[in-house]
Length: 163
Image 1: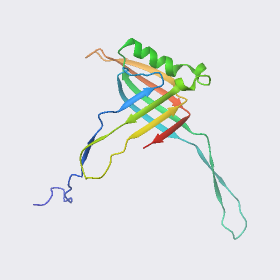
Image 2 (image 1 turned 60 degrees about the vertical axis):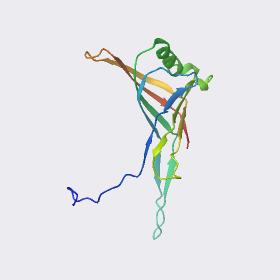
Image 3 (image 1 turned 90 degrees about the horizontal axis):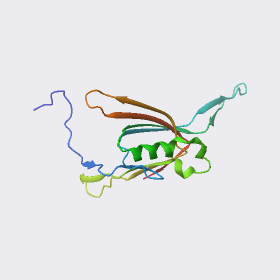
Image 4 (image 1 turned 120 degrees about the vertical axis):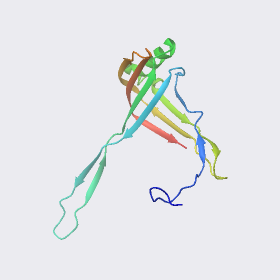
């Protein structure tokens, strides 16, 4: 029997779960009821063109600027101690040089392979952002459940990646 959309049938290649995803800061920010996080790390790149000489190809040069990262965090406002610790750890710009360890955020994802090809490992991923500083915080409440949602934005200066 042919596929309804005239596509080649696929077979399952395996599956994995991520049961132990952990995000943390230097002082421990467990209990902050994190719902989602989006991390972006980018660098500006400028192009410089050369006029060149007649009959010869012109060159182009790339000039790399300083990298910068952005984090978007959505969480539910819950336990007071966790809320206070999160804001204190990443909200004070005056401690970013004297206590850089207070402005470090790590994201550890440890997938478990529950089904798949033998001998194929599912990698662990660790991201470490340093120089994390909150730049905005917003709150919302919905009438249906009266849960206080917080959306935060932060910037950071460097990111390390480990697999």
